[in-house]
Each structure stands twice: as structure tokens, then as C-alpha cells.
Length: 433
Image (cartoon, rainbow, N blue to C red):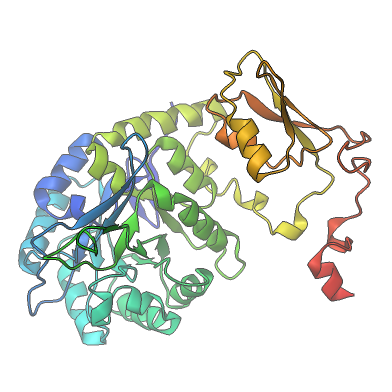
């Protein structure tokens, strides 16, 4: 059986599945239940400095985007960092770590952007025996308006400065949590690395408004007739998160910087995709909030089975395997040509492929009077839309044309395209000329 033991920046856990800093990790009761359910680690919900208490709203905190089957696709939250007293949180962290020494326990922190505030809270967190700290530079609502969270994470100079303070005043491993609300995710990652961060985690939530009440004309969730922007998470953000993880993993400036992947991890397959793109472990929130803590058991068994099938003996065998295959568009192989093929035995004659292709694509699917659907190779550009809209898995597939065959659509012999790096259609080649 595959060994799922994780050693992320020196923090050991029995598996790579951690709960992200969020409502599920807000208190001792939750965290103990999470560990008992099988989670390898948790990032304790973000602590703030002592001072005026944090006051959360006493109305709805979450908005949601549902799929057609009521499956939760994304959650928007307007909750702030913990509103529980710092001393209570620290006492509970110490108690939990004492009783679960084999589980990872990292503490998320967000305090004002001055060195003394960071120095003070770091000393108190260190006394709990926690395994490390995560700097919350990502939260896009509430705290950002107070000069913290994503207000720091959007300024690389601030990230570097605060990370240096943390590394100077603490012996604990330091993870910098990045905001996706930025143009180029590589810049804050580079700043974190310059500041001495041991790792980065991403993505934090995406600034959003999920819906509007069309009777009250207010964004949801509503608080006494008013609404605000919040942080969006869940399966819907996974593609954005995967891209940002890959950008950091393949950038020469951040190559080798450990990554904790966050953003819509719901199944073992999601986790494996993040890890293949360079994440050393993953953090989960929305899946636990939707299905409960025991969802991790499917993740553990699924990842273990997958690794056994692939012959991987440890998670390190998986981490980064897909990174060399992530490239820029200009380097894609134009000599690779495919055509759609419809398996008539599997086709249920619903016509979705025909409607999508005829109305919005390349008119490459024909429909006979008795509703038999066939592909017109001379029109098919292999865009994959028919595959994507077909309700029957693997009913429509893409078949590669062999080298030397003639593409019925273009008349071009497959394999005759010039090297794309010097092809006249390549904007980079044109610029070079």
C-alpha cells in the first residue's frame, strides 16, 4: 500500500490532506473531530493581535452558487478572522498539539503591518508547540479594509518585509498564503521567497459577489438590507488555483519553492492534480463544510489506490510530475491533428453535440432524418466542444490522425507544419523578424 506520509517543509503528517484556515478550524472541538476523522493536519483559523475585539456579523455569512442538482459549486463568505479571544485560542492550540503530536498543526496569523505586532504574537504562538505559522496575506474582505489580508498580499514589498520579520523573530517554519486577487501570482511568490518564506500556500479566496436579491436589490448574503463583496471558494475556483500553482512551480524565479495547494479540492483526484502541478500537500475547506470531516477518508483511500496503480511509493513521486508538460501556447505542436469520433453504440441521440456544434462552433456534425449523428471531418477542428457537452462519458472521443495523412479540412499533410517557434503564424516569430 502506498505510503501517504507527508513531510512538508519539515512538518510531518500521516497524509497530505490538511484543513485550511477557515470556520472548520476555529476551535478545539472542531480540530479534535477533524483529527479523529483522519485529517493529516490543520491550519488553525486566523488569529489576530490583542486589542479591540473582532466582531463578526450576526446574520448570514455565506452565499452559494449551486449546480443544477443543488451541488455546491462555490461559497462566498463575508466572515472575518476568529472572533474568539486570543488567549483562548492559544490555550486550545497547545492542548490539541499535546494530544495529537503526530498531526500537523499550523497557525494562521494576521496582525497589523508593524514589526512589534508580529514579534509579539509569534512568541506566544511558539509557546503552544505549534508546528508552524501561515501568514494570511489573502483575505479579500473586511480585514483588507483595515490594511491587512489581501491589502498586504497585493504589495510584494509588504510581503517581503513582513516575511523577513517573521523569520527573524521565530524559529517556526513560515508559509505565506497568497491572494489570487492580483494580475501576476509570480510576483508575490517571488517576494515571499526573497523574504525567506519556507513555502507559499494558494489560493486564498477570490473577491466576489455571488448573487443579488432581485426583490430587495441587495447583494447576498444580506445583512439588514445591505450586502458586500466576500471571498469565493469551492470547486468553481479550482481551475484558477491550478493555473496559479503551476505558474509558481514552473517559474525559474520560484522553482523549488514548496507549495501548499488550495482551491476546490473535493476528491482525491483534485488533490492529485494539485500535487502533479507542484503542490507538496493540499488544504481543504469547502468540501468539509459541505460533506463533513469524514470526506477525507475517501480522499485518503482514493489517493492511495491511485498511487498503487501508478507504482508510486510516496507522495514525493507524484509532486511536480506534470510541471514539465505545462508550456506556453507558442510551443504547442501544430503537427498534432485529431478529429471527433462518435460511438454509435453509446449514443443516446439527444442531439446536444449537434446543437452545440451547429449553432456555436464549426457545423461539423451531421444529423440524419432518423437522428444518427456523424462527424464531418472536412469541417471538424477538434475543438472538443462536442465531447464536453455530451452527457455520455466517452461516447465522443478525439482520434489522432497519423503522420502523413491529409487533414480533410485543410488539405495539409499531417507533419508538414514548420517548427512552430519559427512559424509565420507565431506572433513571437513575427516579432523576432
